[in-house]
Amino acid sequence: MEKSYLAGLFDGEGCVLIGYRKTGNPRFLSMYISITNQDPRPLKACFQEYGGGILTRSIRPDWPCYRWQTGSRKALRFLKDVLPWLIIKKEEAEVAIQFQEKKKKGHKRSEEEIQVELSLREKLLLIRRQRKISLMELK
Image (cartoon, rainbow, N blue to C red; front, side, top):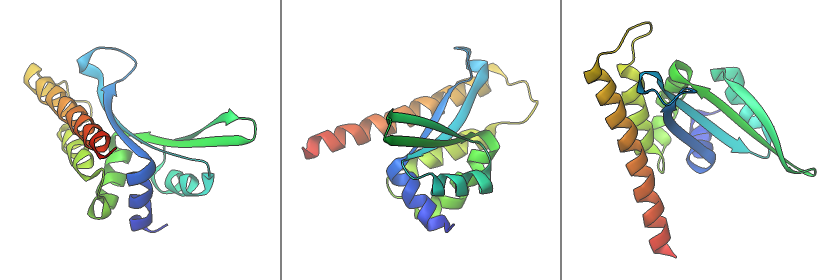
């Protein structure tokens, strides 16, 4: 599937998150991405190319909903691949890429490194809030 198509899909239906991995402990911050859609075909293409998983959830019995999600290094590769075509989520993707590139596998992080990660998480949340406010002002 074309990277430009995936970028458009992610811009419209995607989400990037820096969150705590099953705990509230900042030592376990991770980066995740997801795309939600009613058509599983593009999500299967993402799964085949980037790994992760596909979840199925139905809003109603006749209305299936699918979500592809992946994290860390796999998400980093996806974001780098689609970054040139992103418009809406470009800033968020850049922060997520910066976050993930600072991670070192099997490396015990210092308090300073944890603070940098937390500040990148806050920056991501701020970008989202500002976009939400901008959209509300259009109404």
